[in-house]
Length: 164
Length: 420
Image (cartoon, rainbow over all chains, first blue to last red; front, top):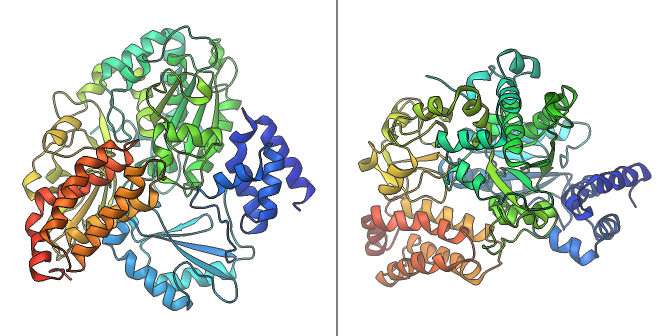
C-alpha cells in the first residue's frame, strides 16, 4: 500500500490531467519510486488511480524501457550501448562493469545494491561512453571512474531513483 | 557569427529568467502578440524557410498551414523533445542552457495556430532539462508570459510538461500522441494526418524543440534575416550540429546550415583525435546512410545531403576512424532498431532482427554472397513497414552496401572481421 500523502498527491495529479490516463506514465513512475520497481500491487494501485484495468496498466508498463516490472537493486546502472558510446568503448565498459560487480548483464548484485542494464542512447554522445544511475548522468566513463561513481552512489544517503 | 539559440548561453550554467529578458528575450513574443495577427506570424515562419529540425526536415510553416481553420473543439501543439536518436544531443544541451527560447517559441506558435494548450514531451534521462523547463514555465506564468491573457493581449495559452519513460518510438509523431494520451505508444495510421486528427482526435501540430526555439528569432528579426543565416542559397537558418565519435573536440555547435561536412569536422570538431584517420560518418543520426571522405565538401543542408544519398536528419554527426569496422558499426545500429521496434507491424518486428542476424553472421566470418542479396532485399522490403522506424533502420545498411562493399566482401572472403 502506498502512503496516504502519495495517494492524495497522485489523485490530484490525475484529476488535473486532460484525461485520467494521460497521467499513467507519471503515476507508474511515482509508484516505482516508492516500491523500487513496479510490483503487481503497484500495477493494481495504478489501475485504481487511473480508472483502468490492471491489464491496461500492464500494457503500458511493459512498453517502457525504464519502468521495471521485475525486482531491481536499489540502484539501476544503465550503460548506453548505442552507436557513439559503442565507438568509444561502451561495449567493453559494460562487460568490465559486469565482471567487477560479479554479475551477468541484466543481473542484480547479491547485496541488492546494483542492477546492471544496457540501455538506449542517453543523449550524452559527446561525452561517451555514458552511464546513468537514478537521475544522474555520467560521461567519459572508464572502469576506474565507474568504480568511484558506484562507491559515491553507495555512500549517498537515499538512493536516487526515478525522477519526475 | 550569429547564434540565435546559443546567444543567451552562460558558461557552465543555465541562463536566468531575468538575464534572458534583459538581453531581449520575450521581445519577439510581445511583438508577435501586439503587432502581428496569427496569420502574419504563420506567414513569417513560411517566408523564413524554416524546416523541421527533428529529422524529416518538413517546412514548418507549411505543416502549420495544414491545420484546418474553424474546426470546432480544441487544437493542440506538441513540442517533441523525445530526443532518442543515437548521436543526437542538441535538444538536451539547448534546454540545459536555456529553456526560455523554447517557451517563447511555443507561446508564439500557439498564438499562430490558435492553440490554448501546448505540451512539451520530453524523454526520460533529460532530468536537468526537464527541471529547467518546469522552473521556466512557473517563471513565465508569474510574469504573465504563459497562461491567461498573455501580456494583456487577450490571448491565453497553457504549457504542460510530460516526462516519458524511455522508448525510441515515442519520437514518431503519431506514437508520441498515443504516449501522451497514456495509450501504448504504437504509431497510428496516416491519413488522417495529425494536422486534421491528432491528439484526442483534435487538430495537432508536432514540432521538434530546436524548430520551435527558432521561432522567436524569426518573429523578432524577420524571415529575411533568418534565411540569410544559411550558407546555401536555398537554406534557412542556423542548425545545431552534434559531433561525437572519433573527433578531437566533441560537442554541440550552432553553425550555419550548409557548412560543408569537412569544415565542421576540421573547424569546431578540431579534426580527428590524435592518431586517427577519418573513415566515415553518419551525417545526421543513427538512421542516416554513412558518408565517406568523398563527401567532405557536401554542404550540410537538407537538399545537398539528400542529393548525395543520405539525410541531414537531426544533425547528429557520428564520426568513425580507420580502426572502425563498418560491418560492426552497422550491426550496432541494427541491434538498436531491432530492440526499439515497437512490434506493431510484421516487416519491422521480424525484418530488423533478421537483418541483424545476417549482419552478425557476416561479422562473425560466416557470411556468403547470399547474405548480401538478403540485405539488399530488406532495404527495399522494409519500406513497406507501418512507420518510418524500419526504413530508418535500413539507412545505415544501405550506406554500408553502397560505400563499404569491399569491406563486407573482405569479411566473406577472409572468413573473419579484417579489422578485429
